[in-house]
Image (cartoon, rainbow, N blue to C red; front, side, top):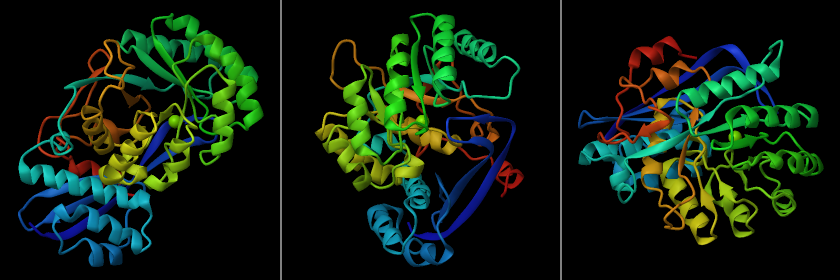
Amino acid sequence: MKIVDVKTYPVVYPVKDPFSNGMRTTRQRPFGIVEVITDSGLSGWGEGTGVPARRALESQVIGRSPFDYAVIWEGLQLQGTDIGAISGVDIALWDLMGKALDKPIHQLLGGSFRSKVDAYATGLFRRERSDPTAALVDEARGYVDQGFKAMKMKVGFGPDYDIKNVAAVRRAIGDDILFAVDANCAYDRGSAIAVGQRLVENNLLWFEEPVSSDDVESYIEIRRALNVRISGAEQLRGHRAFRRFLQERALDIVQPDISICGGFTEYKKIEAMASANHVRVLPHMFGTAIRMAATLQLLANLPDVPHSNVPFPVLLEYDMSENALRTELAVEPIAHVDGVVAIPQGPGLGIEINRDLLARYAA
Ligand SMILES: [Mg+2]
């Protein structure tokens, strides 16, 4: 099987109701979709952050077999291709390998530990509302009503907003719901510790990205100062970027994103490094149906650590914000039922792509 072409589809979803995390307001959601086409008639699909240059695709990808995935990965990087763009090609190559062998990707990774996974609702952003606290409480109650047993809220807006609203949401959802918060790197070390000391009174599952994603020393200090799990690293590219975070145990939970960190090939290296250093892995997911399907393949293959009777939950990040490229790009959408998502069992990623949507949201 030989790769004969790679098509790139830069797409943008325009958000109707803009939402903010601690760093920025989202009005548009860009994604880099790639289709790797082979002479067998099979196509593989991937999602990265951006797409590789035509010249790099012609010299490193076209003409090779998808089973040369590691050689292709190194070749693209040597050509100077951003790892976020390599990620999409790599996911498409794994989709192709699965399709060629008529097996889901989790079988290529070593099998599945689970056929379905609990999801946590990612939402509770800051929005322009007359009563922001009431809006957050309503939204959080809505997730409980939909059956979610876990959710994550955005913080990083200063002590007044964070302390008041995290407490209000915790009160509204009760003590049985797993509840994490995410500052998206909006604090410095001092604010993260000061605000964090108040937030942890709300029985948090984890405190995500309190500070800048490359500030290993601050993560270590925050982790020692706060009685809560610290998570992060969703923006890191390539396994070496994770090295100090893992070796120095700057995180309790490392959250590589398959469409940013370098695809399946790089993610498995990061997972092995995390395991060697006793750091928990829970992949980040904020993208289209392709990234969601790829992340589900990873979660199928993620062992419980430790193998206890009551393991720490393996959770899918289920983005609740508006994005037709997540909800409609797969012909059969990946949806949760009572907060639980089934792992796709079809060959490769296990989804079929609705090409009309790529045209509709072409950048
Ligand atoms: Mg995050």
